[in-house]
Length: 115
Length: 112
Image 1 (cartoon, one colour):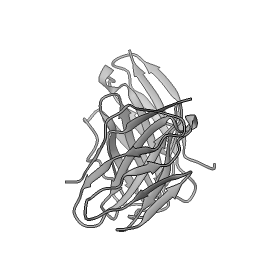
Image 2 (cartoon, rainbow over the protein chains, first blue to last red):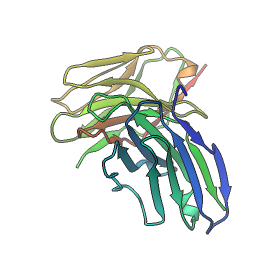
Image 3 (cartoon, rainbow over the protein chains, first blue to last red):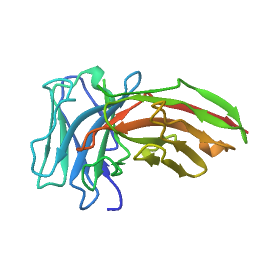
C-alpha cells in the first residue's frame, strides 16, 4: 500500500484479555517502530526493528508487551493480560532505512480501550 | 540523554495571526530535527525537517531553522488558517538507527 497500515483501527477489550495489533509497513522499508500515545504521557517509544538485527525493546513498559516482525515486513504487537493503563493509541511507523535524515512515516494508529 | 522541550498549549489565535511554537532540545552530537503534525482524527504526519545546523525546513507556509548555538528549532507561520488547528510535535533523532524522541506536543486552535 501507499502508507503504513494498521489494524484494527479500534479495539475494546476486557481487562485481563490478550490483544494483538498488526502493522504493515511501507513496502521496501527496512526499519519499523512501535510508539504509544496516551493522555498525559505523550509519545513513547516501545520497540524498533531493523532488518535481521535483534530488535531494540528498550521502550517496552513491562513483560506483558511483546512484538515480532515476520519476514522483515509485517509486525504484530501483543499485549497480554491487558490492564486499564494500557488504554492508548498504538502507532506503528516505518522508514526506508535508519539514519539521521530519513523520514519516518506513521500509520493512523490502533485505538485500544481496556474496560 | 536526549530530550525535547516545547511550549505548552493550547495556543489559541485568530485566523491570519502569526504563530510561533518554541522547541528546544538537549542532545549530544548533531541530531536531526523534525516537526510532526497531528490533525484531529488523523495520524502523525511529517511537517518539516532539518538535518544540520542553520538548515531551514519549510512546508505549507511553516518554517523552522536549526539553531545549534541556542539548541532550538522553533516553528513559525506568518498567517495561520483554521485548517492549521492541530497538535504539533517537535522531535529529534540523535542516533544512526533512527529512534525519534518527541516533545510533549502543542495544541494549536485557530478561530475564524
